Image 1 (tube, one colour):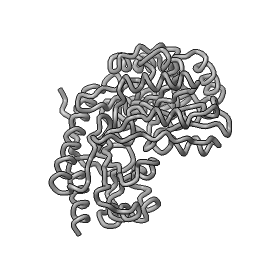
Image 2 (image 1 turned 30 degrees about the vertical axis):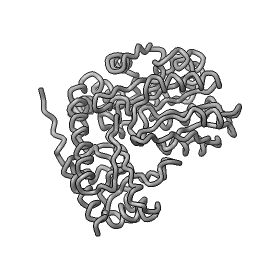
Image 3 (image 1 turned 90 degrees about the vertical axis):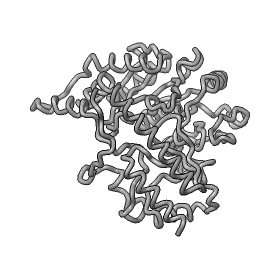
Image 4 (image 1 turned 180 degrees about the horizontal axis):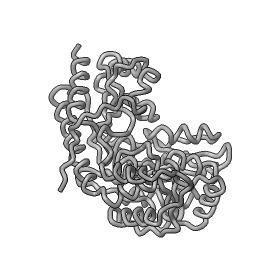
Length: 391
């Protein structure tokens, strides 16, 4: 069995990676240690790189068809990892999950219609509907005493009216890294079905469940869930190849599927570039051992954050993620304003993280930390933060 090295520090300069290249633009300084955007600092697995290299040996990059084993790779992965028996006709390629959300908004809603989201949540859930002329309705999550979240179905009943056409679900949840229980998803499916809401389920972190937790695809919890859902998935987050842009949609309901996929096809938005299927096939057919080793390393990174904060920064409380490499830091005990919290991280600790406020109501006083990085980098970042707080 090959042992992968996640301690290796890779110089990303010259690669135009967004994590480093936009620091000056977004934070006003370029001397920050970036632990924000959700890609990892680990090398993309060698079996993916090798598959791409093999194709690069052919000197022609003309129009290409989708390889037949692309679909079987996805179907087999979903069956083996999530016990989801997906039919071939349910699947389509999409060029990114946020784009898929935007496509669905344009297909199934009209300007002025309402889209429900559950903040604090991944900010494109708000930005994409708003930029497309839809009204966003907040159904805020409730934080429990243990730090994790639950859906507020009483509030959902209050905010949902006849203009609400869609609910966008983060499953597993970003930024909290929480997997939803089957009972919660069933209750959500019952509500949305009875109120004729389409559920868009973003499940890009599905393959990164941690600490013995399991991800449950929304569409699998009941027939009602299957009938109202469009699920988006991808290998790109798990296998650190976001720049390849390879995502897929799963739509069990024939009526929804026909309408959505006809629109994608008419606009040629369901046709991948030459490299996307190659990378996906390699990831899903050869990637299980790498995935397991990566998740073990991420779990140890999370434990490191927990131990370091407990011993050196007790005023910052990390919420242990149940999925993904993102840690939700509760900084409210510092009793800082939003501006002062940003100043602490950026100008004093010289760190670039995603601030909680960008994720909407309930995110104030939090920061989102990316731990998909070598442990030495993580130690450096936390040391800088501890020193800044003590100063």
